[in-house]
Length: 515
Image (cartoon, rainbow, N blue to C red; front, side):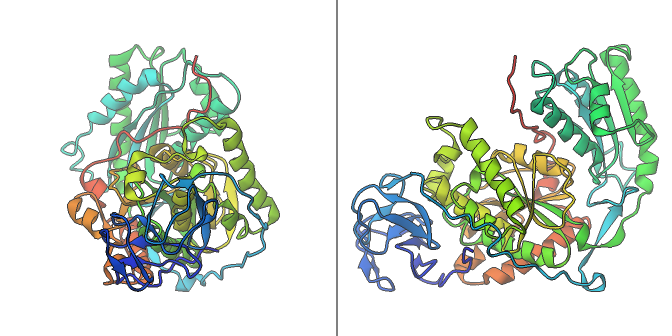
């Protein structure tokens, strides 16, 4: 298990583990700077968040951060030297999965001791944190109609319905020109069906064209959906075309508003929270502040009976063994490794993607040398409790506790799968400053460092950089995150909601052939 508390955050560098052969620059470190705590003088100009060799590291030796291998020395690296992608080689190495070896059951608090929030209790027992009406498209060909219907319900028009958070149109680029059967179509339908059932929707319209491969009837059959007063369907070619479909759909939404507005928030247990965990624009501080602090908040949530959904499969690659060891069973651990192997097979060596080592330019500038180092921080969002289940993309998440869902690392696509699985909130850590919304669920932004937080206060909800500044501990920030999560679940608006983000981040995973 990765130790997620720092030794010290008050000097110019941070040592994360006694066995590490690199330290992290807390602030910009100049050439000739004496690092007395480590006994070396800097031989390089090292930006904040980046790595410095704490000792001489011979060529071929493992680079250790949190006592975990993040690559190998490509050359002899002298103490005090800047350590980054220019002198760190990315290569595969053996990892002991030790399935379920370190699993420890987490005691869940009795119901009367669990934290509570004010949520919308739905007929199927799920609980929403928001109260939207959604318009979904079966195919890109109905995208314009979907958005025209949503645009008809401006904030002014919804003023008389104060309990409705909005009418949102969610379109995508799939549904035709793709395989008609098999996993690509099943996955798209699973995603749409999951959104139709998400508890943050009080009502849903699904609009198709009529001749697409993703036939509305096939979607309804696969997902066990039936038309009813809260789920209505339209086919443009059967409804008289664009204008008439828009008019009919607007009329249908108008008929849903009164019932949706009559729904009232009720006090419910935090066990009804399903939190999708995301990180984007990560930097060298992600593994020191926001990610482990979010992990600490998820440990609290699990004790209160809730669910934490870690995803982004390429972004746990290299540290997947730290999760298999926490699996509740060998079977669950093997499910995770099967998904890792699928990614390795599909994205074979030679492709410039994360699973093969390459991280984004923003990650590089932020201090991350390769995917192993990025994964080290990314995995920390899930906390330290046992891994209870592994899900396919957009599968309904039914287990409580810490779980994993197989998704790409692309944030909108990953979050779409989590929301389809039932997530009613997204917690999103960022070091570079990702701007993200995720209607119909609130998205909470957690900044890794104070400099970025102050620069982007309109987008960031909480500053985890206080851990670096020495004004708060990791556990204190973890508790603040948990408390904020309850407030947001009860209706407090996030920064992304105040900016009305989330209308264009619905991105189902396209894993098939486009023809």
